Length: 102
Image (cartoon, rainbow, N blue to C red):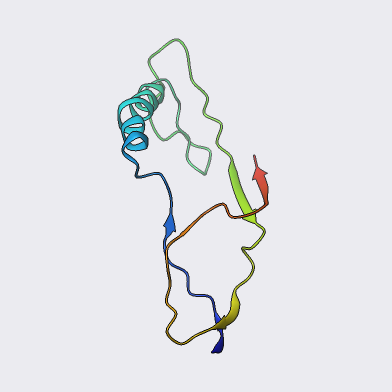
């Protein structure tokens, strides 16, 4: 056994489930594409990136950034046997703290 950084595999998420993929492709993305026709897009410098929408109504998209920290996220090293390798694991183990920046 050695005191090593925990090997991490890929996250196991449900975003590739057939019902989630179908919803995203058939519902969410077509609605989002429609909303973008009514949205004025601005660059990080504040200048318009595309022509003004031609509709009488505009959609304002409010984006925000968020991070989620789980109780066991910071445990980075532990005693490991030399034969241990990274394995896929699920997100969301234990209590969490969500930090959002608007």
